[in-house]
Image (tube, rainbow, N blue to C red; front, side, top):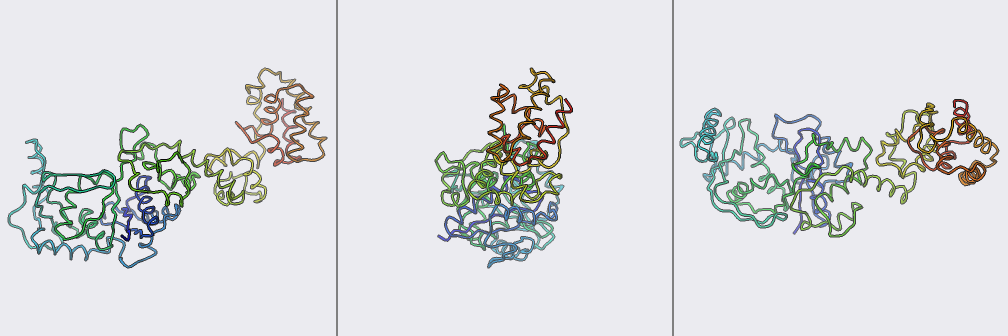
Length: 479
């Protein structure tokens, strides 16, 4: 089989991480089988259309490396790839259903339909429009809704994730195919588009499972072969009690990117959110995901969203890029994440800073808060120094003396290199009789006034002799 998958988002706003996972699995399946992935923009709901949302979708997919084979920008043999440009195609297929007696124009006013709905509610029975189907219908033309004429019966089908499924006549109804504005509903348009585009695997959220019997009836009425159906379970809120929403703390993919999450980490995390290959492996490259992916390893239950795990993965990927590709490769990712104070410093200096701080980063945006003292003298905070848990038992005069001793030792140091600095620090420990936590905390805080910093000898090496001694002297005078 020539595998053809599709990602068919609606341009109605920001792209949620749940939407993105619905793009990742079709991409992996297509690539694994040397097939085709189509990007189709389902923009027929004009009331919810958001200007610029399509470009955001394209940008997000490109950032993640989910390149499509057919669709906007790249073109293809099955366009147009915007549903709003395929209106005449849907009308042509709608006329086929009218000709076969399986669709009808519905002149019923919305107020009357609401009466029917209320009537069923009062009688405590399900509302099915087919029970109120009009008997005398006009010829269909744009401006009138077009409805499918259901012929309810039992349906059996296999879902690649949920297994063998069954539904009876009670869930099938006269669904709307074409709306008053002439645009098709999702229920109709995707059936036509998937068939014409040769889609073999339809992957979408599990929320569409209840509508599948109506889709099967449409396939049958249009004499179309069913594609393989793949229902993807919800991504759940951290509490696991509902579908994840923005109010649960999940941000858009763009927001995560702007916060310094790497594309590799986001792809890795979302691919494994509800899927695993049966091993304990947690870090996957895109190529490894393509190689190991399989539909039968997608779990049928929802997966809890865990931002802590995403940030942990991001930290792992930051270190992996540095260790495997080098400091320059990671530095190339950091352009927008340095503090404003770094603007006047050259690339070589910032690479040195990154080289000693990278293993503490969770996201690239941490650079803004973790590295400011490398570029500008920090404000002296004696309370932070005196109340440090390792220093608070030492008198202020003793701290001043200890700091002056360290200054003299470092002033006399000939070679200002990391190894020589560490040797000098070790000699200071022996000469002063202080514990490492005491001596090193005093010097570290005096240099950075930050909650933490890299290894002390590395910090002093990057700051340089002049800056290091100037800061230490300033604190000694302030105590």
